[in-house]
Image 1: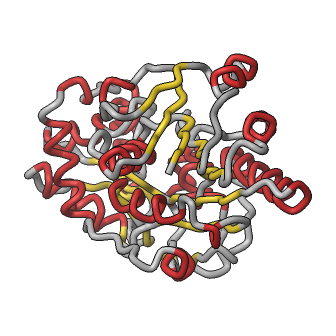
Image 2: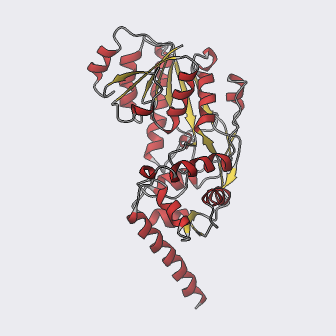
Image 3: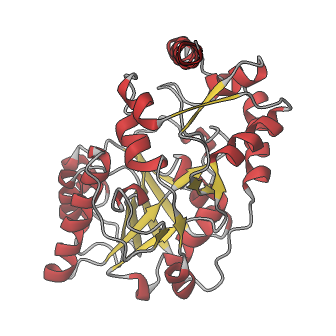
Length: 338
């Protein structure tokens, strides 16, 4: 198989890249070269900014592919560019959408590909929906061989997956835990969520590559393990070797008093209980099974981050904000109690 990844080094794509390279796929990645040092030696790099359409068109002028996958497209204009570049040059075009595009609030916590797409809370999700609409129009009217993939919360060894964190990522929350400081959990921590290790995501994704039955389809790829946020944070604390000290705060309050996009990221996504029905994926890829339990995967992630100081990005502004929120909650409790 001959494939081109636009991106190829991110949380979702890096495991796919490694697995394909190990299996002898003729794999090209097209990116700006910022994180290519970790790429396997047999991956071919086309170094370019995908937004420089003329340059990219010249780079791929003599190349055709079995699969092209864009991991870094977020708005329809980027897919319009991809259509111009790859129409007639690939047998399958895979777009990475998002499970956050499913309707919010959900009418049923069980989520499948037939769940309606609508998210009034998050522009990111609405843009992904618009991207899907554009690509399916090209499939229906022009025969563009599209497959849409919807990941949910996928993680790797470089960042701890959380519900509430700052702009610099998750390390500051882990640091609070290590310092025996309380951390914030949105809601009461009992809503349901699914974490998927990127190794498991890669199995499903690779099974869709070159799969004729996946053309014209949207497919979600997640683990079948469903956890509460309380269980998720307990697993992270266990991996860090500390006792969890949690302060649970409503998502609406967090969104109202934060400069982060918690309206989208929480109310439009993580605050909702979800359990994914992966029956469609398993019909298309019968061998798919997610084998990494969250407590196992996050233990690997924590060990990797603790061993790599460059991944420990401080976020003092977020840390101070957490203290303010916790003080406000404690103050409200004291005021009501008198």
